[in-house]
Length: 251
Image (cartoon, rainbow, N blue to C red):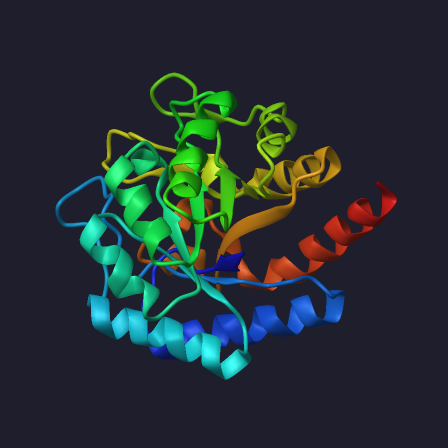
């Protein structure tokens, strides 16, 4: 699962999707295009949130239709579930909202696959209850995404024991490589990151046996309107995935 943090425009989304589709086809990796149609969790009121819901969702649908690939986007409130489901294949529950029962149930009732981000504040074992809410609402198409655990006030740490622990629930577990390297709550009001460690986090996750990877990527992370501090530069993606495929084959 890869793409920009947020949809910034149609041309950019299509260029990123085309580049990644070429790489994943070459390496025989299943691919889901990721892009948030709107960013609700922002540090400051003046932070970029999106180009407009309908406009961004239509771009996501166009990406999917153009390249014949599934797409995923975040939802934040119950009223967004049915709306977003008209345009994308996977509905993602943000980590901060993973315990919101009404949101999980609304996503489940769309019939779309639901990707639940593990809360930075939860143990791996606690995610079974989030998954169960979706299943009890009649939807067994669930994925869990690990994205690090809060360590102090401004850092995250990945506990790789959580991947096999959550796999025991019977659903795929994805490793969110880039969000795990965020450094939130900076005094500037802009989230920091450690992108130099993207390869380290990804290699370890594949070695442990994760079912998939989530990577935010952008042609120019320094100019990205959201999460630029921890995104992977798009030109580096093929080299990284090539290494990861070798590790996957080795295990």
